[in-house]
Length: 150
Image (cartoon, rainbow, N blue to C red):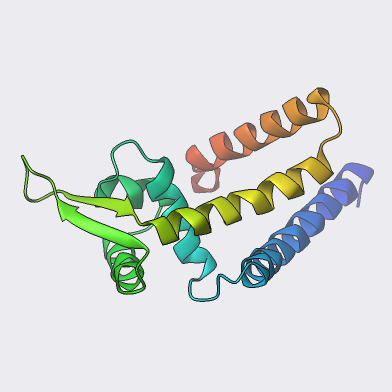
């Protein structure tokens, strides 16, 4: 194995390790903040509803790369738990618009705080921040290009 292959394998292992730990610590942080009734998948849906301009079910499903059926099941759960309000669009009754409740906004802000704390530990300078942002943008572009289809 060449040095480059070894380095790539080490990066891959570190990336996998980070993903596994991230999901665990996201849950832990929410539990420590007394948010115990929603999953990480649900908080990500809430986050996307909160930052979305359109807030339609189809748009949110596309942004999260999940099916409309999966989103519908998640939203049903979030409505029952008091995190989301679902309304039909006034002009087009086929379109469902999602709104966050006060309870959901608190949960999303808590989730955002976790990432602010994590990223503040990671980056020490504007240069670090720009480098990390560039890497994340490149990773997203690679995934959007569906590189694995080649």
